[in-house]
Image 1 (tube, one colour):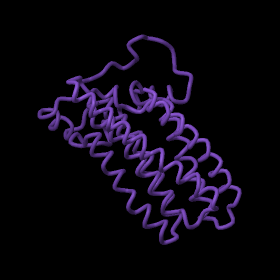
Image 2 (cartoon, helix red, strand yellow):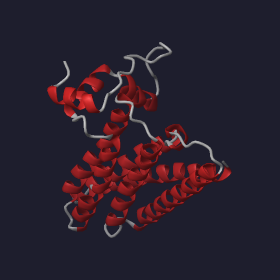
Image 3 (cartoon, helix red, strand yellow):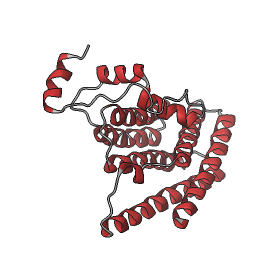
Image 4 (tube, helix red, strand yellow):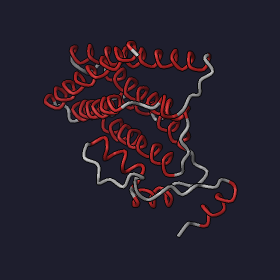
Length: 235
């Protein structure tokens, strides 16, 4: 049953009710990325939880801006050597990436600006954390971190140039055209896993194995970023 607060907000902001299952009526998703998308769009428990926990005035872009702002306490905690605090805040910030996407799908608030800001927020969180840890990590991981940051900035600039060209041609910019592609989402998962392992490795002091594992995953993420970069250039 809808909450009283939601009923009040619904008088001002009518939330459409999307269907409870995929329109094609096919079976359950198989891949990891497909499962994540399925949860955001069609999971009944997720819909109920989001409707109950998130006030009606909260928009997906508000969540995105909030998790971007969490970069500040993450960087401060890392600079102060409070690695556990940084890891917890970073985990919360990256978890909110699911919330803003689910909120947009469930309440049908998808927008081109939100689709562009969402991966940008991810890049800011990842790059901010890597820069803040650069004095505590082995040189080879720092080198990979710089490559990750380079590709993040380069891909963002290419996307901005392409969006500007689309607007000048008078073509419409939709959420689908600017949303992160599957390869980009996979890279984000690798980035998050790598940064968390690096933070936890630094937090426990002698976590050399965790730091090495985090560095190896970061190498894979950087490789995916390179492929995305050249794909953007070619496209």
